[in-house]
Each structure stands twice: as structure tokens, then as C-alpha cells.
Length: 218
Image (cartoon, rainbow, N blue to C red):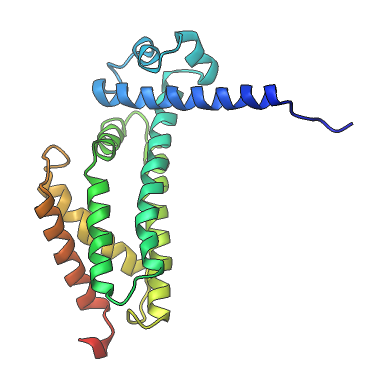
């Protein structure tokens, strides 16, 4: 006999997924506000608009809740970053302008409250939860660099960039934008003006193209 899913069953499953998402969102808000040690499950339940036992039905304990909340936000940040990098699939006639736009948008994402809170929470709890590096970095930096490397490889094949190791080129591009921003934002404690973000993006692309622009274009 083939199992079937009733409309009511689909609705119940959808409701469970939505409730879990709301819990994780609320958990991240509270952890960002209080820090891991000071956050309590009761406050998270109130933020999510659910009963405290409901949280334990979806996620076993505070530790699991913390890991899953950070993983969910890391996935969101990654999705937004990949959407930005996807612009390089069709860079148009002005590669420099497109690269500057990509760099600026990535910088803006790096400076959002959620991205900053994600880094703070990861750094703050790395001793207690060393696996957070794998959870967060693999979901953000590693996958972003891999996707950017693929786009750079395609740009090299099309003659927009000179032939080079795309993984190294991607790593350098990201370091040219994230490195300066860590200092300018004082490790995420200072709001960086838009004009300053754009200036960092422009200089980053200038430096990147000095290394990877085709020789005949120089």
C-alpha cells in the first residue's frame, strides 16, 4: 500500500516548520541581545510567541537551540551573498563596474546587524563550542569563496580575467574587502558610512584588477 499525505498532514508539517523557524529567529534575537550565558529559554519562548515546552519539543536544549539558530542565520547570510556574487555570471560590458558593485554589496552584507551579531556570537563562544567555526564558516566563507572561485574561473575562460588559480583569486578578492572592514568597523562596533564602504570596494577592485586583469588590457 502506498502512503499518502493528506492536506491536513501537509498543513501540520508546514506549521511545524514555520514554528521551528520562528523559534530559531527569536533565539538568535535573544542570543544577540543577551549573549549565550545570559539568554534564557523562557525569554526566547516569549520572543517567539510560543510556550516554553514547545521549544523543547522542537529543539532538545539551549545548546542545540544556540547552534541551530546560528546555523539558520549563517544560511540566510550565505544565500544573500551568493545572490550578489551571481551577478558575475553575466558581468556586462564593464567588468570593473560590476566587480565594484559586487564588492560594495558584499561589504554591506558584512556590516548588517545580523552579520555582525553572527560573528560576535561565534567569537564569544568559540572556546565553549569550538564546532561553531565549522558551523558558521563552512556555511558562509567557505561556500561563498567556492562560488566566487567558480565565477572567476568562468571570467578567465571568457577572457575577462587572466588565467590564474581561481580559488586563490577568490580568496584574495574577499580578503581585500573584508580585511579593511574589520578595522574600519572596529570589529563590528562602529557603523561604517556608505561612502566609506564604496571607497573600500573601489580600492579593492583596483588592487584585484592590477593582479588579474588580462595583460593586454593594462
